[in-house]
Image (cartoon, rainbow, N blue to C red; front, side, top):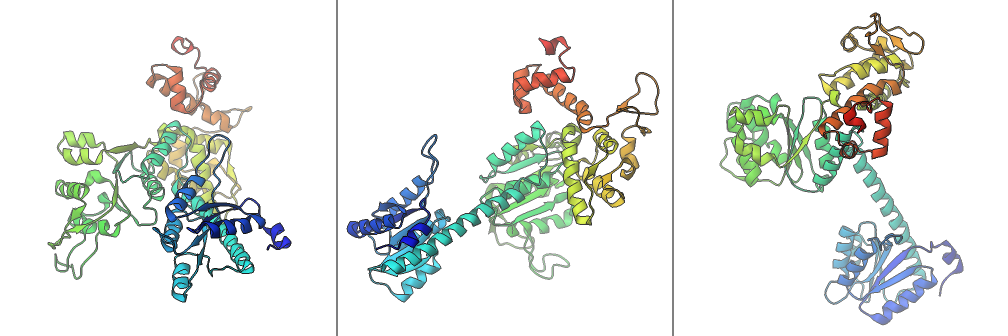
Length: 496
């Protein structure tokens, strides 16, 4: 019944689920597939088939990884859920599984419908062995492509979800966990932090890792739109609503329907606009400017502020009810000056980005340049760092970014020190025992920021080293070693 050459070509690990209410037909097909070196299982109806597919994709316990099915061969006519209904469910719920359809009374219309729904092939009973082999080969090829597409899609989602966010600071690691936790839900998210800390990237990551990823992500900075136009931008307007309204306009909320809207600088919205936003958040309804038509919208809302909303509420500049409505999940993004250990990582990321866009071969930073970058306080945060690196890539004439490619205000962040190399360390022009020193290696450049971060964490945890280690994402032994290396174990509170 089988061809030996075909047996050798068939991977022995592929599993096939047979779905047929005729037990004799199902077992006969299972015998044939066993000879073709497929592993098989049988379900006698669509409900049992879906349960078998779901169970196969779950781990069976420690040491027993999932063993999913690669192909489903289903009869079309079954009591309860039909084969075509099962095909729809499998295509939607198990997109990595290929399907073959069998029928005892085939028609062109049914065949076309099955293929349109995603079936690899549509065969008429009794099935000819050679036709079934060819159909199985096509199904296996399609399943391989489906699996690869799913892997690529997963990588793509990761690429546009989290890889743009650079940082290994302990607080950033907690933010990554928070993104993972909140992304699948519809919960409103409020981000706080200074301008330039990367709030837009966090909003993109939440959207890309959510079920709404295939729908629009609409972004708007409320502070960049005049108050008289902000309502129209958000909710749209009807023709003739005001001077210049020559046609109906769709607002940002409706444009984001089914997806996500990100409203930055929400602190700049007027009290009247805050009231309108409160209604949208509570009811998901609004009226365009100049219209009496009420529009319902399904949209996930992410907001951001660069000023403490609690202070604005206390001063009566921000509605208390709106504040409590949006303060469901809060992500507080630290300024770059509080995550100094991330500066080399971010600098390397921006160097790669801008050197490639400029077609330049720039491989890194000189020790003095890296030290200067690590000393600067970055009032403009990550956005300012990127601008500094882009400028350096344009001005540099060597494969390494030197200190001469950095702007004066960055050097002034190191007190305009004249840098000269002397015996392994780089002293300043200042004299005396208290003269500051600029490090000449990445390890030394990171020493002082790391010391400050650990000391700050210790103080925040009242010098409890276990809690400090947990907050920093390291184990207790590693914390001990770092404290000793940084000279933090001499204080009695730390040494005890």
